[in-house]
Image 1 (cartoon, rainbow, N blue to C red):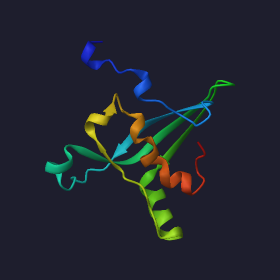
Image 2 (tube, rainbow, N blue to C red):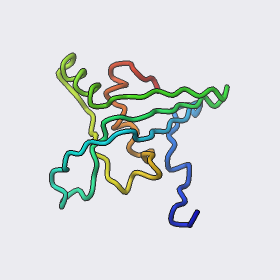
Image 3 (cartoon, rainbow, N blue to C red):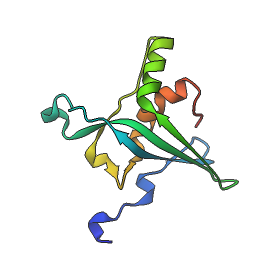
Length: 119
C-alpha cells in the first residue's frame, strides 16, 4: 500500500455522545444521476444504499445493517411530509468505499427519525 492509499481509521469512525459506540458507513450503491451545479459543489455522488456498522465498545459486540436511503427518504416524506437527508456526498469525502465521519449524520438522519437506527 502506498502513502496515497493510506486512510486513517479515525477519519471514518463516529462516536456516540457517551463514547460507548462507534459507527462506520460503507457505500453499497450510488445513483447514476448527474449532480446539479457541479461547478459550485464539485464532484459528488448520490448515495442510494449504505451498510452501517455499529461497534459497542464496552462489549465489543458489532451490529450491521443495510439501509436503502432512497426508500427511507421516500417513506419519511410520505409519513411526516419532511426529509432531511442530503444523499449527495463529495467524492473526496469517500475513502476506500467508506464515508468520512463528518457526513454520517446527514446520511442516517431519516433512518434515525423513523427509529430504524439509534445511535
